[in-house]
Amino acid sequence: MGDFISIRTNSALLPRHVGKTVRLTCKPTKLTAEGWKVQACDGGEVTVTLLPEALSPDAYFEVIGSVLDGTTIKMFRSVNLGIDIDMALVNDTINLMHDPRFYDKIFSE
Image (cartoon, rainbow, N blue to C red; front, side):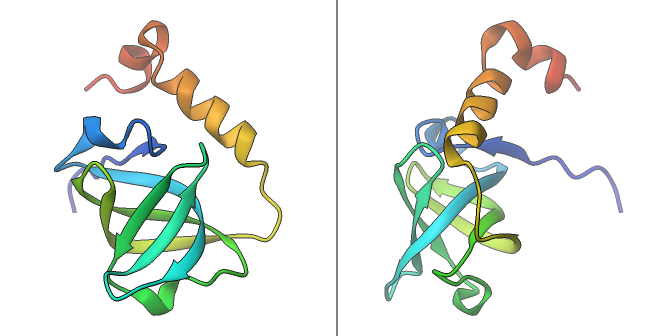
């Protein structure tokens, strides 16, 4: 199966990754006709489409999927992270990963 690259992101950075596969740490908040509305680690709202049964408002998740636009991810799969996550720490880590001082070292090809 070849290389599979997925970049961890938050809602603020999501528009940079349209058309790419990402990982979004989030908390589902509401199931709608379009999919789940989730709160990303930076507090922003994102819509996650497909596989609605894969998420639950009782836990935090890492959603893996393709970015359709600046606020929507088409989910491929999800990972249940449990009920107690420090979202501020997750967001700080993602921001450091995307900091220009470190980005090329982390995401070099």
